[in-house]
Image (tube, rainbow, N blue to C red):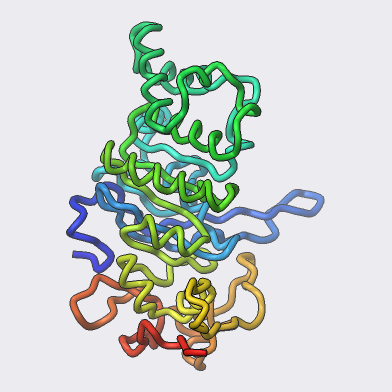
Length: 346
């Protein structure tokens, strides 16, 4: 069994194998390729039925690109994506279209992802019509009312346009649209980052309730580590297009092994004012994905860097001890880091 699998959550629903996504940069008189953006570099993981895999990292690290490549909203440059054992990267457009019923996405910006010229009823009708899920107008209307009820919208509001709703209500519409085709797997691409904090909690709780009620599986992309901790079964940490650590949520937050993960977690505010948390301040900026450094991509900013880090890219390997499912891509990852290290009484 792979170290990043989770037997407690059931069978593998989606398996990502060595996904690569590169974007060419063209220039010159002949418009030739002059450089390449390495957005996603050799990423592999499994997602099990019924779980939520959180994907975190700084802006620009490739999280959203990875989510779109998994669904083939953009075509991966290399690698494979297996959905229930079927390699969807090999499917013809018509076959992929049929499969999209089972794989949906909730976008980050509810203001930009809804057609302002369509009512909520028309927005929810569109996927139902495309996939032929209703045999009459009455059946379709019942489906739309049910979707509105699922996400906490009043039935009479379906005749309104997106601009008449608040940000949180618009995101509920986006969630209802994703649910309209009865999917099994949903990529949640930073679904709460554009919302107020109080509304974020409502949307996260809604997603959790829907997961329990409908048996959904999520890839939850975010940069808010507290939100990810709350909703995720497991968490994968991404840096400059690569996964540097993956573990069960509780394990990763209590015992981070990669220096980048430790730095991210040190930035989370502590609600107890009597405690002071030691911040790990990273030097420099994130390297360019056009020209990433040799060896470990993180070594220019790593406080624990050695000469070996500058020439060797460490693979994701299991962290020893306690039979915990935990992988880290660091030459010096171990179990010496303590959960309360860096917390000092004032």
